[in-house]
Image 1: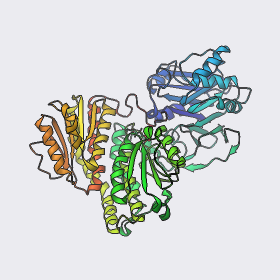
Image 2: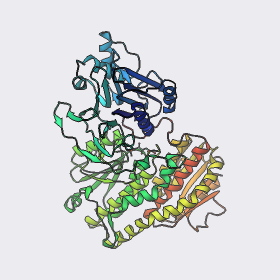
Image 3: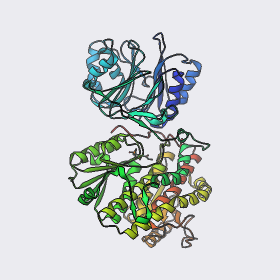
Image 4: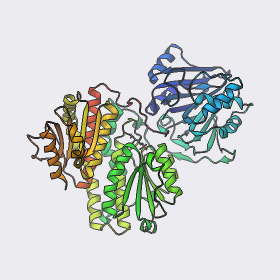
Length: 612
Ligand code: F6R
């Protein structure tokens, strides 16, 4: 949450920063600001409430053309309303220290009172301004020293960038929770909270670890721990293509990312499977035969859409490994006292690898002795570095705030892990694994067929249903989590109330809601619970609900019963949740577009949730 960008070099500083913020706007978009320092030490700042375009309009009227280094921020408000005054950057008492920040400084009120009693004047309601004042108070010519002295006084989960007019030509970055990545260029360097801001300029990147401070000049990068010990930067080369962070002709990133799914699934699979051997090879999972044999329980830790992937993962893992699996929200797991020991496998599912609740819960699992494997889309992220092993999804950067291609890639990764463990603990027979892997290889083609004929039909249905205010999504077995995911997609981008339910639970309460105004999206593929789903659809129709049924191609049982029918290619049961996700994403997308909603940046949301 909140996008941070810093640049030092010969390019036009304000342009690099604004372009970086544009690529990070998915992290927060309720206000934005920029600060640039000129060669003669003049500090220029502009801030604006609202989206980045508002800041750009201001900059058109009052351009910041000069400057050799600077910072920019796009905000997701925590402390203080999203006004211009509260927009970052914030300065210290003398207006010479400039800070942008992501996260929360928990003891800011205490610090504010103390500094107010000593004459500091605060202009905003933010916790960030307190950090700026604190660093200003401790400044004695060296910015990095002032930051180092201030850190022990700050409590919370934060990342910030600081510049000082009186210690010029450097940016100091601190990480104590939320991500910071440093991009290394020739005679120029970049700092940001996420890779896309930097990707157009360099692929050489360094991810700060928690508890590290970086001093970035145009030629050098020095990293220290909070005690001042120097740390050797671990430079990584990112293989994402800069084209992936552009819309490429699509109206929205979300639509582009929905269409990228066959490619994302292929990339997540390829190089990892040997169908003829009935096995998968994922070296970075770091789980050898001995370690696999020890596992007697799996706990999945995730949030939001990734948690829905975890629910599908429970089916996959139980069926293919014979092990008991629990799926927990990071925000719940972290405050429980889970039963965990060295025979527990903690499976962490997170697209960003930075979600605060997921990370806190994984630390608890680790402390209690669990072996951790994370399924993650961002190389070098916190989750990937704090796990014993990692299975990367190769979805590429996901910019749309509503997760699409990351979700289907997570399902592929979960299947791979289930086969990996099942083959090594002796539960999964070679022939069965061979069949599953063959089916996985065919899946991207089935997704492509779906993507060819689904959009037009779903756009038409969306036009007819977009005036409804409540939706119910029903599924059973492997498709029950997909019903939850479909409902989440609809509510987050169209602001329509939607509930996902296991269809068998409908009669225990939600059936009371059904009337002629209630669309019910029923996932009814030809699997082992198909007939039960048909009965549930009958129950909905008996109460005049509007049924949109998703079925296998050539299923004629619902003709004349369902109001709308969407047919999907016939695939084996384990593949169905992945394929059946696609039409639900498209339905949510077209309804949101019809309602004129901001699809890629829905209100109140942010892509990486780095606060509790
Ligand atoms: C919904 C969505 C969120 C994320 C959740 C976890 O479309 O994207 O629900 O799934 O915030 O994020 P990650 O996977 O980055 O941990």
